Picture 1 (cartoon, rainbow over the protein chains, first blue to last red):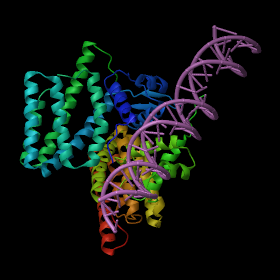
Picture 2: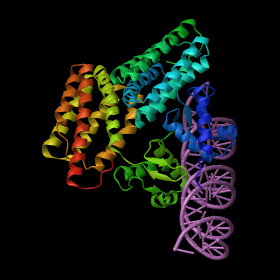
Picture 3: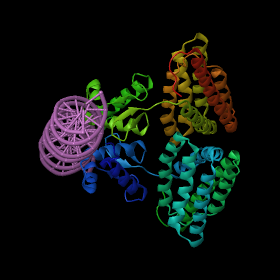
Picture 4: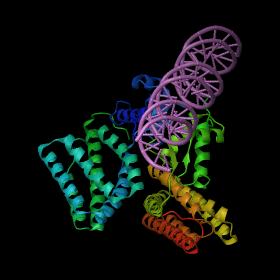
Length: 225
Length: 225
DNA sequence: ATTTGTATAATTGTATACATTTTTTTCAAA
DNA sequence: TTTGAAAAAAATGTATACAATTATACAAAT
């Protein structure tokens, strides 16, 4: 009998990654294996598997002396990540438009409506969730496995930065931008959907950059650049 | 004293990856830890670190029962990889053109000349090497760390496929295409360099696809699609 | 006071033993 | 002959012991 097991390494991977994304582990902080294995109450063996994964994703950086430190976040890297996202998600939107079934369009329409409601009532947590749902559903539709894989690797880095500069509730025009993408998909217009998606991602980047400048001006928090 | 150590896991990672790329381990073949640890004469602990890396890069696929199998190669995935490469390397060429120093241009000119010679004399091994050198040097120049990282992950997958369909010596126009990219860089024309690079990558994809069709027609070898 | 060398502690790297899960085999009953 | 359950084997998952490397503390020399 084959069943999907919940492996210790995967749980550890997720937990450590969350701690990095949400700032419990700070940029450039050194993490030790014993410390982590005690914290997560697991042995070093599965822990090291988890650390290896995070090292591959460059959330953790192996120093020449073998110690691991939490990756730093620079503004330039975040800008690059959004540039890459605009290209990858652009392709995804184009392919999704080509492949779209009427069921797909119904699902996306529902997600968009929930996004609109969340925005209207100021539910920032739900707003982020439905936004992600929209993008994830498109990714699934596109069938572009490699693009989706690469995207998943870099998205969390961008999310980390967004949390770092407290982006929640700072988005502008996101509802309309998503609606425009859906418009292209409904019309099976791949080129339109691609362009709308690229604009949307770059507009999101602009929001993030504005937020960085706001924080820098008001001298709140310590922004790494 | 800090020194760069040669870790068992890294050696194992490289060796196993080579065996996958060059077909010693075949698509869908199941690999066992004990088998590999005996073959490489290392214990399971560093081996498992290496396997974890290859799993993250999707050269190895973890099945629900925990067994690892060598990833398959489909024509669609290769096409997608080249599409992504054209985008990433396009950006890289654009940034490289912006950043180019006269030293950089000299280095690239030398590499191009070596590439031309290798092509002229039919040295296919050197031809591939200098081609890679050209792209790697641009990648370094661009300063786009994330793009370079993602590229390195997907390139080896494409190389694997190229070896699979015996691409060596089947390239057309590569010398001229590289020359055109260099032209854009010399003129600091980012848009031109980006376009030339994109065309170059997609032209390479076309070569690969032609090769697939040739092989399919002549019934040589077993092509996965 | 600064540097250098050495002993000690701390940390990571590796091997191996054990636990758990999955697969295969065996063998009896239908 | 087929089926199914139980036992055995084989493979992966985890914990731990040990080895090798790196960092620290501190005394001695300059």
